[in-house]
Length: 539
Image (cartoon, rainbow, N blue to C red; front, side):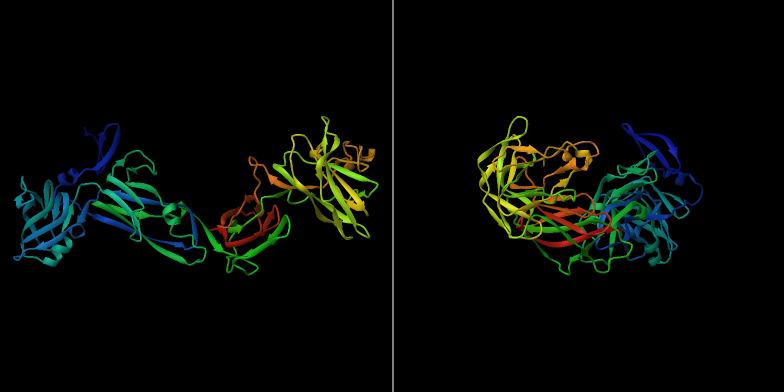
């Protein structure tokens, strides 16, 4: 049951269940001596023009919706008015049932009689209306039509234009549309003003305000990377019952970014070829990018058909200038391979080698290890095909095995064996924090072993940079099913993003920090096609 508990201004506080709400108190207007004060506020719709960049990405856009009972409403705004032939008979046709508590004619007329439509005919309103000045006060008649019998000989046009009604029903069944499209927000039922509540998204406060989140709705209409001009939108609020309706979209309650179509080397859809694993650096460029714009993301669609194999790692390790390992027919070197490479099958090894005058020929042989992690014997089918190297600077050389080798649970070692000429194999220096790392440990010996540790100069002692030298090697193989490895990684100064594109295209979003240079690291030889390259900036 609804009970009146107290009066608050022009509203009264009512209770339904445990939740209080405010309704307008028209008795205060009725009880005043003389003519009641009526302000034209009521309408069935409110609108707002909102301008946004066509390329806006709308992260936040909150609209303040106002919906509260109005003091008075122009009849012409909520009904069709038909004046009788004699000019003293006016029909107010709402087209839907409405509650009316006061009527004030204009143009010099007064109300003599008020009749309501009962579905078949007009009947007198009982009790008869109480007139205060020119205002007829009713006992809240609910009807689809009213018939007003008027006294006076005034201006009919002014009567129709200025007839005022007090409609006590609260605004109800609100709908919000953008540019006349389908509703993007609804409030079913009557608006209830909740006392003591702050402005929020859950309901209307006592001032008749609430927040509506339209970020998704406007985001679906903007975000065109090819258009940067301003677009004008019309936001329209409608109500089944007349009330004070209004919309506001404060700048403080919106957050926008912008998206711009970019090119690389002047091409909208560049093709990037990788002859082997490794990095490429690209510079996306946007025409007419505002000077104050700060890049936050790069978005691009990537197509490709990468092979199933991956190089681990695809970049580095970098060479140290502290030492060089010389390998020839009389001196071989062996390196411990990294465990946990995520590879299930090892197809090849890649080593950075430089051949001396006359070139060289070499193979790689895999060795198993004993419980202490020391190489103990060569694998029967673990020797690669021989590779002939021409004299020249260092390059990464692939040693392919005749058949893929399953990665065991115990460490593998790889021996570099030179049949002709000599090779330079420069090691890398690991970070001091990684001292004691077993992967990359080097030993030397005859081609058939045994394998000995490096001289005392390379002992792993605190402060000894030579003790941090490790062999440089890349594993090339097929990832295990339970440990997939992405084919490509993308970076632009922030966190890297991994992806494995296909022929249908994959949308990749890369966070940007600092400059807009895009680094692409491929895990194997492949060809990539880039399209829809978009730069996202702050508003």
